[in-house]
Every structure is written in C-alpha cells, then in structure tokens.
Length: 323
Image (tube, rainbow, N blue to C red):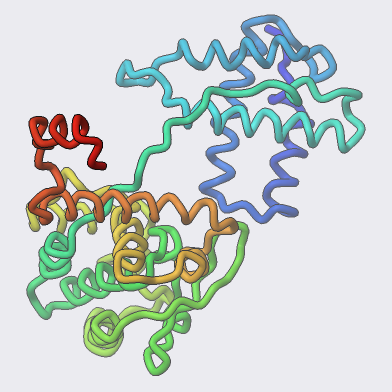
C-alpha cells in the first residue's frame, strides 16, 4: 500500500500549524483530519505516494470522486461539504509550498461545486417562548436548563462557546458574558434581563444545592463540565417537550437570535460583532431570512399583494393608451 501525503510528517506539520499558529479549536481540527482522511483514501486509490506527485488533474478528479461518494445513510455529500473538503486540501498544498516542501501548488486553479445557499432556519417568537418555558420547575437541573436556554437565545453563543464558559465569565451586574470563539478570539456579549435573572437563579440557588466544585458555568449531574453533546441533548429534550423537536438543531437558537435582532431593526454590523463573525458577508445571510419573512408577511397581510390583475381593465387601459 502506498504512503499518501496526508499520512506523513507533512500533514502533521500542517495540523500543528492550524492548532498553534491559527488557533483552531479541537472541533475544527477534527474536521480537518476527516477531510484529510478522505484525501488520503483518494491518493492511495490512484497510487500517489507524495505531494510532489500530485497534479492539478488529480485534485480535479478528487472533487468528482467526492461527488460520487455516499454517506453512511446512502446520501450524496452536500456541495457545501465537498467545497469545505477542497478548502482543506488547498490549505494543505498552500502550506507545503510555503514551507518549501513542494515546488508547485496543484490545487491553485481547481474549483469546487457551487454550494447551495441554504437560509438559516429560525424559530418564531412563539416557538421560542414555548422552548424557554419547557423547564418549569425550581430544582437545580431545571434552573440550569432554563439558564442555558435563556442565555443561548439572549447571546447567540455557539453551543461550544456556551459549555466552555466559566462562572467568572458571566458578569450579572453588567449583564454581559465573555466567551472565546473561533480562532481563540474573545468577545463580550450583552444579555437581557430575563437571561440575567435565569443565570442568577442558577448560580445562586442551583449550583450551591448541587455543591459543584468545577469552575464551569454549566455542569452535568456528576459535577463535571457539560460537553457539546451533553448541551445539545438538553436542548433537544426541551425542544421535544415544547413540540418543536424536528425544527431544532444545535445552531437554531443562534439563528433565531440573529434573525430576530435584524427583524427588530438591528444593524447587520452590530449583529456581526455579537455573533463573532470575522466577515460581515457571513452575517448578511440573515438579512435574506428577514427579507423573506418581510415578503411573507406582506403577501399575507396586504389585500392586493397576491390578487391577480384584472385582465379586462389592463386590456382597456392598454387600448386607450392610459398607463
């Protein structure tokens, strides 16, 4: 069996670069490793054993190869997934060229499939109200879950950012939380009074009752820091209680936060800062959601929005020259 580039020291150096110099999170690094594993399988299949042997046509064929793959559920890979995998491959070859490990970048001119622009799915305010009301009691677990849900909707945090919070990251007097996002970039996000009160109830009544020693803001029943998977299971459980389980994904509250802010008149640049997006282009997809909602409300509310034209009147006006 040949020894493909992504199994060698080149790939290890690339992953070290992503971790140390780019500051990628463990979650992002795992995604890069998965992409490189696909590239390894492809290079092994066509008998390429080193980076200098890769030609532009090989990278182009890799994209075609990905389009023919199927997931464990028998579904084709989404074009967005293929595009992301190609970004990983391009990053690898660019790194190898910059480090002097190769003389050319075979991926430079290769383009991936145009990804579909899927609009983020946001819940309605009524659905949000039902979800946030799902933990009804005052026992420590309900206090924790209510604080988590309120904070996610109030701040737009990613679930990974939420579970990484420590108690000291929440300033209830100033109504802010300090989180670490992608690229290890920190930002301070304001939160509303309802979320602040929910956090106060959890930290002053829930945590002491559980006698938690961890610095983590949100812990599991055993006192350890919640994982991303654990946080997601909690959200999904309450979504099913609220009757909206099929509509909720790990990013749903984040999408709803951004969409509802823009619906309320917030500036897209402000929403960009709150979400921690490096580029405003990433945030602008939410403006499309708001515009689509605006048109839907208009079409439903305006008496003549969807009314078909009076063809006889149009023909009469056209004949008379009355425009």
